[in-house]
Amino acid sequence: MADKTILVIGTYDTKNDELDYMVERIRHIGGGVLTMDVSVLGDPQNPTDYSKHNVAEAAGSSIEAVIDSGDENSAMQIMARGASSLARTLFGEGRFDGVVILGGTMGTDLALDVCRALPIGVPKYVVSTVSFSPLIPPERLSSDIQMILWAGGLYGLNSICKSSLSQAAGAVLGAARAVERPDGKTPIVGMTSLGTSCLKYQKFLKPELEKRGFEVAVFHATGMGGMAFESVAAEGGFACVMDFALPELGNLLAGSVINGGSDRLLNAGRSGIPQIVAPGCLDLIDFAGWQEIPAQYQDRPFHEHNRLIKSSALNGKERRQTAREMASRLSKSKAPVHVILPNRGVEEWDREGGVAHDPQAFAEFLDEMRSAFKQPVRFEEIECHINDDAFAERALQIFDVWLDDGTIKTA
Picture 1 (cartoon, rainbow, N blue to C red):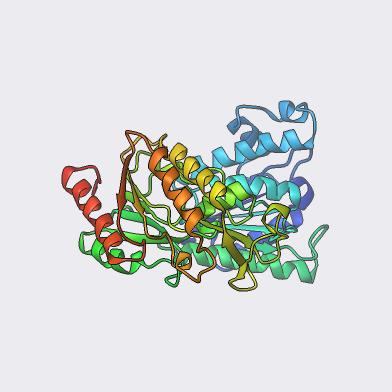
Picture 2 (cartoon, one colour; picture 1 turned 90 degrees about the horizontal axis):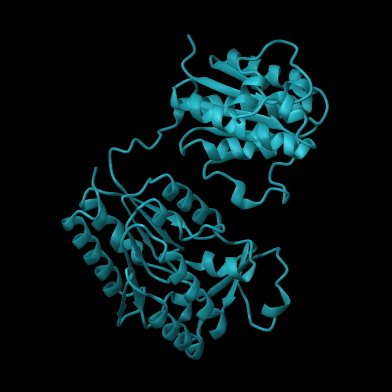
């Protein structure tokens, strides 16, 4: 009897041998398998557990309608909707424990949707000819997706591609056996930050929140961390958020790839999660080390943090824009929002001598923040720097009030 079951998805009409090889590898090491065919035109050599007809029907369509949809792009998008819906239903029924999906660009496009449809903690492996490629926009990646490059596997089995396929088979089954999924028993506070050289409040807040019976999940606000934070918030996975690091929002407006997606600062509010928010690092602009800096930002000095990321500061006009955008997004919240503005600085590098030190631009930012926020969002300005103890202490006071009055739920 297999201890864990893996859902294996792919286009069996063109990749039957490769998919069957992964199935054999999973079974060889003691796993169970369910198979799903997402082909459109052809058929597998042998029936799969879930056929292309089942997948099309899960999208509210039929294979005939998929074929007649217009082109391969529209056809595969229908199959992606069906595969995502069917996988979500099957997981909800306890039919499988992890998923592995094989594909080129077509299969990878579908795979990204399927992985986003499954909750965090479900092992998700994509074996793709375009793994880690710039073809894949970061916002399409689920928060815990794993990818393996399918080297040498475009057409038919060989010893090189078997190496990738067998690793994926072992990895997904091993992950299904080892994973500790969030159980929901302990309420979680979602927090954003950067390293402690830039933002320090988490060092005080984490132990204090744990004393109150909460887990604290701190997300690195460098693009993928913000996307993961938003993904968990969209699923209602937090009892409260302390969203104190917002450089991803400014980066989004500046056109940097280091952003948290177009829905940054929106999902907690949509899910009815109370938010304590501060504009930490909202004065910064970050670009990938390899990214060419757009012309409008090339006239300012940049600090190369390492070979992956370089940072500078927004000017006054840009900071006003980020303040307005922050206020606009928080105004849509269905739950209470309390904004704290530390008026002596919002990250360590804005102190005198730092890359973001610009007293005039910061004054413009403060001015815009004071006018941008309207009820029901509560806005509070405090006389301190974000890295002062007073900031963390005030955030904890707000949390405790909400905890006492039932705004923050513990179960």
